[in-house]
View 1 (spheres, rainbow, N blue to C red):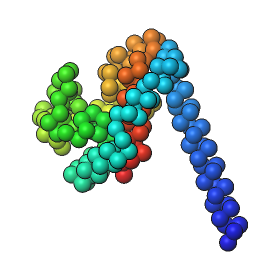
View 2 (tube, rainbow, N blue to C red):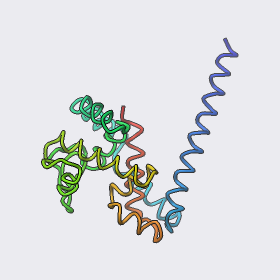
View 3 (spheres, rainbow, N blue to C red):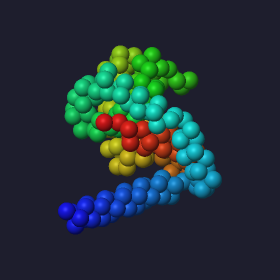
View 4 (cartoon, rainbow, N blue to C red):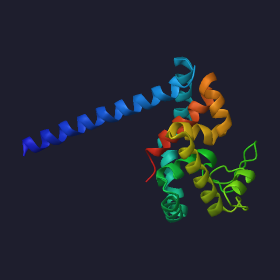
Length: 190
């Protein structure tokens, strides 16, 4: 019995170190694309942590799951996207407010601009399900284009053309903050 516990404990430690190593590599990949210094990254991570408490994120994740969980599963299967990514984007973009509107004209759960929605084949992105579909299809196109999850998320936040510019100039802390928020929320979604 003790041998099983020891083996399980050892396996858990190895898994934790592997996850930490992968996360460290991904963070280095983001910052290697940029000229962001350590202070900028630290500020972005701190801002992300102060953005919402764990309890608030859990509550948002539970409400999203209860209201749109089945729809998100269907949509994620249709576009071959992880449902956790869709949920995290919806939480970070709108705090799951269907009527959300940004200063730049992005609307709904996933913060989709009407023009982007039309490009993705959806005229009515104010409708929550169409918004989820358009946002997911757009995210999938960004994943295909950049072949990197963090760059696709940066492009979802900034736009694909701006990400290409930022690869040489460096990302601003706001973009790093957006990616960290998605990562953080991702830990709480089902």
